[in-house]
Amino acid sequence: MNNHGRVKNKTEPVIWGDSIVGFGAYHYKYESGREGDWFITGFYPRKQNISIYIMTGFDKHEELISKLSKYKTGKSCLYVKRLDDVNINLLEKLIRQSFNYMKKTYS
Image (cartoon, rainbow, N blue to C red; front, side, top):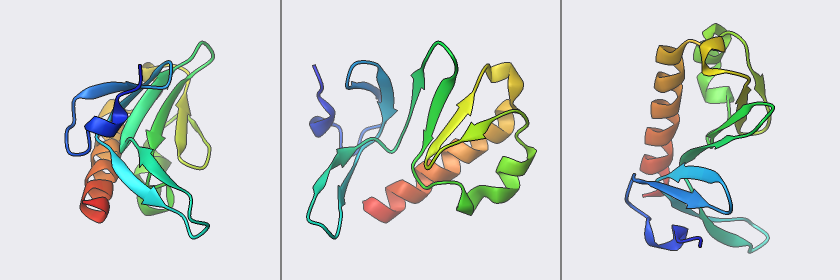
């Protein structure tokens, strides 16, 4: 069951879809008129890697990203094979910065 529509201002973990663990929520609307709700940050533990959702993208966080260590990125996903591959303190800072920016922007 997906109950993300009820967690707009909460930060407790919620399962989105089948297996994404998301925190917080925001409402988006594209110029095309498409709109919906999505989590502010989240992660998806997959067999080949862990996907960590940084919804601000990475342009705002270039300095932190450059020091993280072993990772790959997509549009708003950070992919790591193991948490031991990255600097956990910098990863936490990156997630917090993104989360706070999204919360401020979409509140």
